[in-house]
Image (cartoon, rainbow, N blue to C red; front, side, top):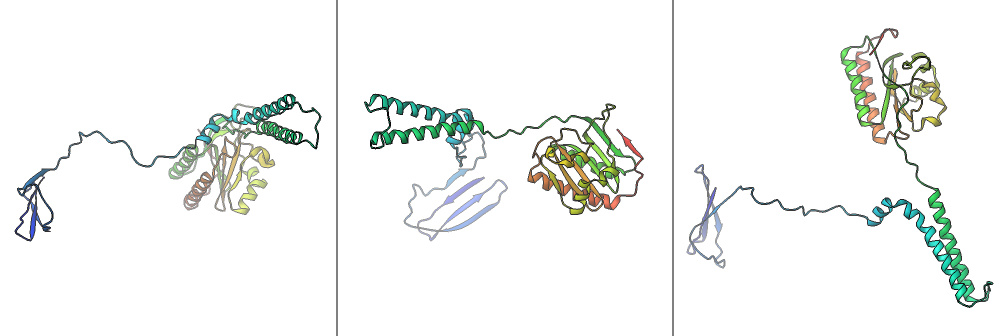
Length: 311
């Protein structure tokens, strides 16, 4: 593309012409300002270049701020926790040394300003020592995922349509990838549609403990969830006595979410981390439960609970 401009000092307007290779010209009338000076009145030709040979410029936008104190504390946690002990010990030694070399009687005298100052300094030093001991004794507990103690299990109801089986497997894969889920059991209309993931190992044989739907539905955990029709989150399963009603989950399951599927079913989701399901995970599980309820309610037909296939 070429841009040609011509100016006339005698006229009232100057002309600016854009000419492209496609023989298309555009003429714009620009008001003439006589006070403006130009080095030459001859037409000027400017060639637009799309060359990308120039070196990329460095990023000049806003950069995230850094908190140097917070970074130092997080990277030197043990040293920072022990710092009050060192400060308190050094202060205590300094007070005793000052008392010894000052020539004042070692017995505290209430009428002496030096004695009162030393008592105050000793109190501050002891306070620092106690603070350091408290910081060292109280530490945040690190919660890490555990390896479930059980066996791999994949039990799917044999008479389910392929579309429902596909959606159940999709729900499992979604939970497995996005959350700390390690076990999934879905019971609907009195039938265990799927049991997948890590299951408890039978003490007699090296096999998975299969879900007993009748016993599960008679338990207080199932009845409470179906009565409230709300998601129940057992963030630390070891603290709940109702864990005995979930014998099909691994013995060291850390957290469980009980998600109702409408009025006819429930999804039992076991995790490998205490308080591992976040609020976003809970909302995501609720959405999955609503979707499964809509699908199963529309396509579900009564099946024989005894006819199941294990793969």
